Structure formats: C-alpha cells, structure tokens
Image 1 (cartoon, one colour):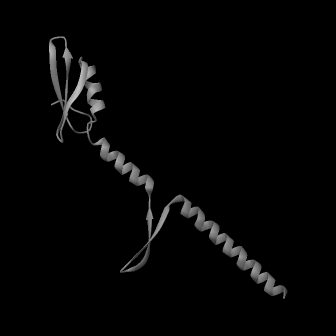
Image 2: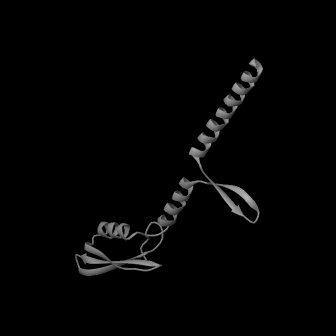
Image 3: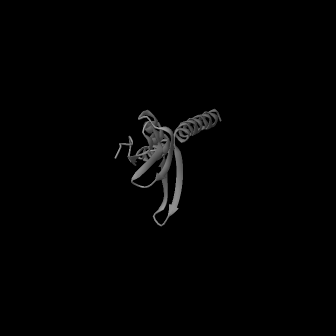
Length: 113
C-alpha cells in the first residue's frame, strides 16, 4: 500500500512539474494548433516580432509630420502638407520671398527632391 501511495505521489509531482514548465513556455510565446490536411501541427507566433515588422514598414516612408518639421527648419512658415503620393510629399508655405513649395521623396529620412 505504501508503494502505491509513493508511486501516486511521484506521478502527481511529475505531472505538476510538467504543467508548470509548459505554462511558462506558453506565457512567453503564443502557441497555436492548426488542423489541416497534414494533421495537427503547432504554430508558435511571436507577436513582438510582428509588431516590429509593422513598425519598420511604416518607418520606410516619409511621414507628413516629419516633412512639416523639415520644411519648418528650412524656413517655411504656416507650412502645410498639400499632396502625398506614393513617391513624394509636397509641403507649401510662406518664406521670406513669398509663397513657396518644397517636395520630399516618400522614403525614410524625407530627402528633398
């Protein structure tokens, strides 16, 4: 009888250790089970990496806010973005000589065209 209780206690201890180890791994990463023609397969998704990829995609473009900031540092007053295309960002405003326009490439860093 004592052997049976000892074995049951050992089994419970091993089971609880296994559950604890899998819970820490599951909390660190997102585990998903997909069922398809090739059977059940686990898919581990890293949400942080997806967020960084999306953020990097947005960084590859010139934001209108950044274009306005650069135009103001170039001496434009009352600057406003008038046109945004896939290739360029156009900002119009006033300079010392009167109304003027500056065009930036729609890539990272907003270089002036």
